[in-house]
Length: 201
Image 1 (cartoon, helix red, strand yellow):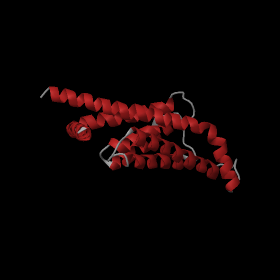
Image 2: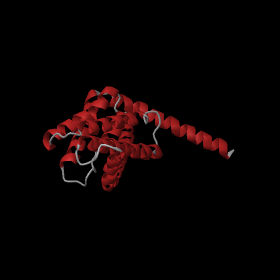
Image 3: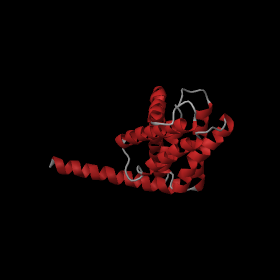
Image 4: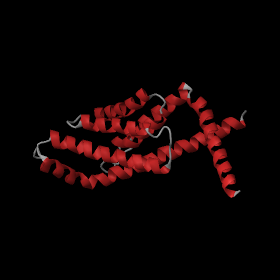
């Protein structure tokens, strides 16, 4: 009996989430709402790169992951980190490893695509860690390849990774902090908007 009640409760909760998502989806489909969120994400990511911050502690990775998850157009979600990085690099300056940095964040968007069907705290934490790891391995391979400070062999590549390890913690912390903030904030906003929409009808 208790098992049947538990299953019923879970089914009702799932139906409620589906109903909330459908209602919010109609609101989210409005171009003005979509544009507002897109611009907000861009401002957050660019600003986090420009203000003083610990090395690699920015919102770009989290914004790429969030965009891949929630932005309906996959093409737009891929453009988001590219535009953010280009806007901030116009101020910070271009560098030899840009292609590796941009590539790492584009792959992070693909990680966000995997969260579209199913989202959970565990999956978010896993994908955030994967995003940090992708950035670490790809960009530091780029440093090894483009800079003269490392020998162009396996020893030089491993040295590049070893020298970057002190900054890896900041990358993990930044991605996780901003991911939790964005994802949790969005879900709370969604519930609030749906609640207000339901009470007005």
